[in-house]
Image (cartoon, rainbow, N blue to C red):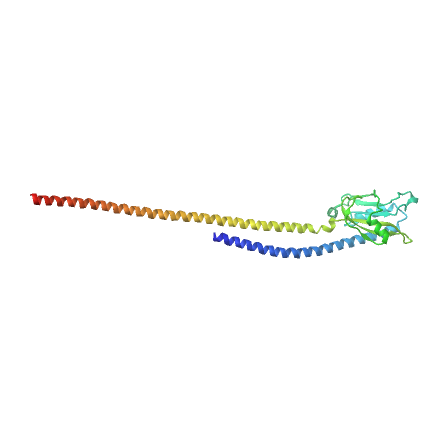
Length: 287
């Protein structure tokens, strides 16, 4: 029982130490993860902006050829590892003289819009190119650059244009030769690109939890073994004491039997002596 108490105390002490160190390690890990997360997001934004600004020059030099934007947006999606959808949304009626729709927005997107899948594909992504099927005039990625003439990162939203996933959109104005804003060049970046860092850390956390549970299970097994051995030792101790007491009792009984037998024999001898004396006395007086 003393061993059980000592083992249990050691287990609780180790558990408290692990919790304290684990809390400190988790805080440090969280700080490092936040730093890496910020660096990763910054790198993704920089890469996306660089790819969009490079494509912007091609768009502005091909304003007279509206069909070329299918090819340009296709290349942007195909070559950028972070972009799963891209398009050029023009002001209403910009190509009316060319018999184009009032809302003309060529859009290219990957049929499998997963950054992980895209980065690990051995072949080129499956790019679909078509016109946007909805009214983009009220979308913030269109209205903000049109209004202030600056590039814009949107808040996360569900993209219904083709990818059908939660994305953020980077948009920048397209200007003609006179400097007037005629369209918006935009690129969709999935939110998984911003949270991809957390996957490995979740696996590490799960592994640490299983290790802690395994250690506690091992300690419980050791405690059970110690307790069982203590019970067996106690039972053996009682049995041994019982056997010793029984042997002593048997020995005392045998001794008493021996004494009783000797006393009985002595009484018989004394009785015989008394009879002989009585016979001798009778012959002496009655001759």
